[in-house]
Image 1: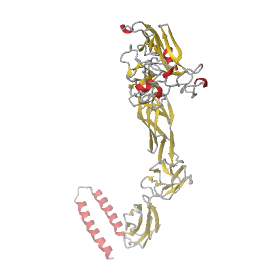
Image 2: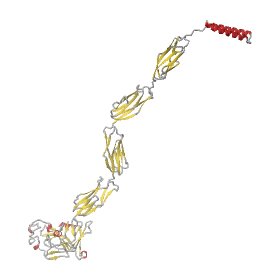
Image 3: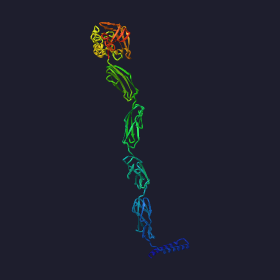
Image 4: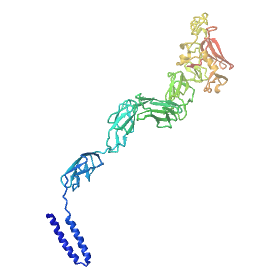
Length: 593
């Protein structure tokens, strides 16, 4: 009632004011009455309405008390206010962990992994309900896998760790599974450690846990070369020659076979798969290198060999003590090694030094040889004949012995070739006044009583000696050394190898005799003079100036031992070997060996 009175009192005041206003306006009366009637109707209506009672919220309920979301997702919670006709249906929303989940007008937004409680409060009072929100991480799938190596070479027994990278970087599940398609060659651990166990190839596969995405590394397991060696390690070749080098690889079961050959001077020699080809003179180093850097070398010398050796002499005559240096020509001029090895077939006869100097040592013959030291086998030789030194008073006519230049006298050789010299019985060593069997040294007074040099029993004592012994050789006894009376053969050599020319006056001296000139090459300017000295019988000199009679040292054996051979030059017309009584005094022209 009090409320109603409170409402009517102002209405009446309002009505009074309205009537007052109406009657003080210029409206018509009719209009004024109509306005008063309308206002009265309004007042009547207002005075009849009653104010309804307020309905309060008795409860609130969410449609879910627990929800699970993934990062970035949203969910709209529905809040039901009771009673349904409560005057104030407004709800206030809140989150106790807005960094995990936030809410606005019931829309829950998942922010980050974690848990948050969403509360719905009734605006008109303390009624509330809650929903626990669990936010799960957002699952980011792998899009690719990459390995730090796509190809890997390992020594048998060694290991290496592969590194796998999954993209994108924020992939949720980064678990990698590893496997080998050929475990007998290479195995792999769960951590990507690859171990080489056998020679060959294997594929190491890295994949996501679901196996959808993979990456592969091709693994080669090898046995590397630890060392190389070349045989021979040095080599000499001629231009154009080839040689195959022998290469030894350690260990023998190494899987590498990629060997690179190289010549540091291909202008000297090239190398093709171990075959050396000599090009030109010089030295080069051949190198074999493995793919892992091991190497071995061979030094190759290419030499221009000696193709010819020539001496200026193919034969040489020297006297004991003489020296002669051979002139040597080695071809070609660019031969790499022109040095020679010098040898003598008989160093007791002749020696040779490194400068080709030949030294005559003693009588005989030796072959001097100069051979190339480059292995070409080329050589030349010279036959050296060494004669005894020509003694004073002798001349070399190119024969096997030396002939005296003058006849024999009691005290030695005559001073001049024209001199007759002394006369000697055969086998006696001194001249005498009378030459007869009665005073002949080697008989007992007659020709048939010989006491030495006898081959026939009827001629005296037989001793079968046919050549004068040194003590019975006048030339040896008087001159000494190797001087002697020529043998029958010595005279034959002189006759066969010389030109005999008789002269009435030797060099204008008025002495007749034979000029004997050598026909030997290199000696044709050499000669001796045999004067027509005649012979002695008894105490008389016969045929001097007309004939020459020169003893040999040889005994006549076919007729009688009382004869010995001598050379008879009779008036310049005959040169002949005659036999004559041993007791007679004849000339001696000595010879020396």
